Length: 112
Image (cartoon, rainbow, N blue to C red; front, side, top):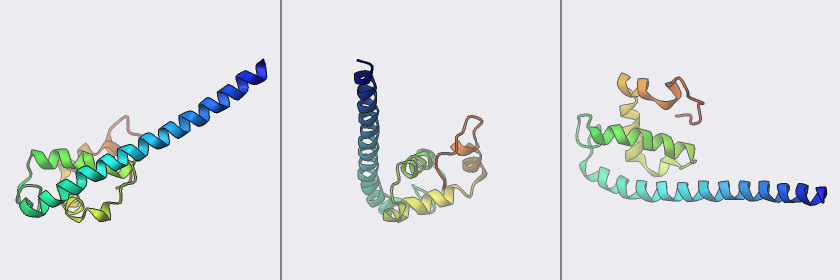
């Protein structure tokens, strides 16, 4: 009976690992689909930033989305406009200071 419990625990751990992998793959797919649409849009309206050459709310929400994409191993080379805007934003102190890795509770998940 004790062996059955051990076997069930091993099966559950495998299932949890598989579930996490599937969730991560799904998240990556969703991010990539969103970035494909955004990349097309930004090619039409962006300048140095998402909307022309001034920082806007769009940039404020783009930067954390790129961080999230990196966490899920999205190949940012597929999205050069998004990457260019992100890189431009990250030259500004306000964006640097608000980066998740610089927060007191940061675990340093993504490397940008």
